[in-house]
Length: 366
Image (cartoon, helix red, strand yellow):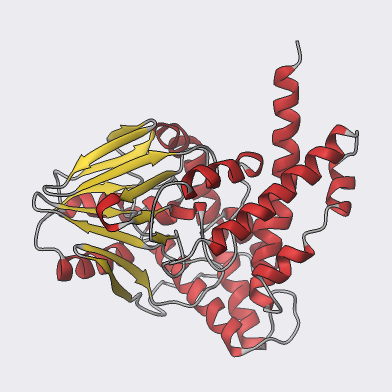
């Protein structure tokens, strides 16, 4: 749930772009564990919805070992999750699954490997291609932007104002402080979280036998990234979907594929399940939220494609395509959620859908 575009845009607003960033010690991350079924747990960060956060970690325990889904954003957070895992699993962690290449889901890979040297780390083939390229650029952009972003948010907290400079409430200000601590830890511990690539490649699907329990790794198509993995625990009716679904605002960022996203969601939701673990946010016992996402994605694709095919420019499309209905649905009247909706949906999904549609049309020309 962390993208350099947001950090850069905040850093550019700061009058102190060279100011020292938080050391990462402003607060210590804490996590809580929720039991979903026998031997199946989700570990969630105890932080409010905000500009970013550590992802959910699914834990599946078998007789032969334990499987964990997604690493964390910093060494400190990863170590804290390990403490929670050891409370519920007596068997060693033998398998780690990265749902996608974004740093908040993979930075802790090396920390897991240091603790469990024989651990196998799984990722989709596209992730292995993207992480050393787009991932490296993403990481460099974030690290460069942290000082200015932290200074800008600290200034806003002191003034009691939001990103837009208008007075805000204590909830939004706490979210800013939590985000400063998060990116501060990421920057301060970056040498401890040198990227470690998965060593097990997944294409379409792969089964892992945990000993008395089978876990399926599935690929349904491009969505949040082009290589998102979904983890299915069939005997528990649990799906862990990474940031394909994130709460409370969908994360359709600049590395997403909004024209194909909805179809991927359709295939994902067709898998029988009783509980869905999003990349961020509470466990979902209903598919209402992802189906609302699906409707919005369908609207974006139809509206953008229609105008593009009619010869309209991207600027015309951005001025015309309205997402007010979905802004009210996901962001309501919450100032912070509206900022997230603007950044991750309006300013990202519409241009990316336009560009991807143009590229697809060009590829089809003789």
